[in-house]
Image (cartoon, rainbow, N blue to C red; front, top):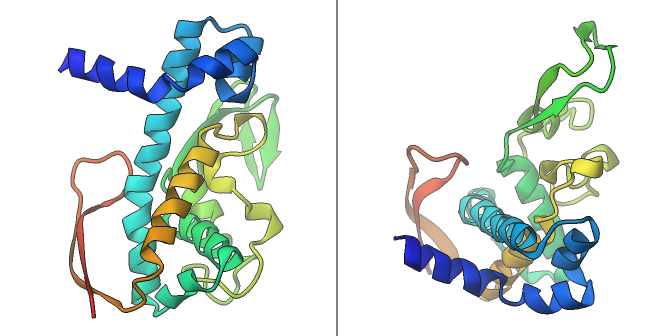
Length: 210
């Protein structure tokens, strides 16, 4: 209901009041860009919700990837290993599969001509599986080597359109997997896909500690 939604929104953005006053953090940057407080507050709420949506759809799928491939113990190998799990997991789950951009000028790419200001739908899902970078198998879980430079953080966009909610999504994922890391013997009992959702997700993923 609307009153409850307003209450939750206020709770989400309340910490941003200090940032607005001091010019620090995301909300402080939005103030410097010319937004008023209500506009900035609304945008911060959207960022938090979008980041959380990325986590709720991506985290169970990343966990299933690790369990299906026998790599769950990687979470216990230290911070650098968990960062590798996080980035590779986001590459393969690709929470936002497409991104929309406008062509800044008339250009031809790989034989395809794009007019100036033409809307272009880019497949992040396809980019994350670029065969030139993964000749062996782009669908395989790659945890033992560095992420190709061309793909680093691509699932959150690139350049001036990079998602400013990415740090929130990453931090939520880190905290979740930090909490799960001690459970080193897990198995999947049951899973089913979610229906009618914007981001691909499990409707349920049931795991059991051995």
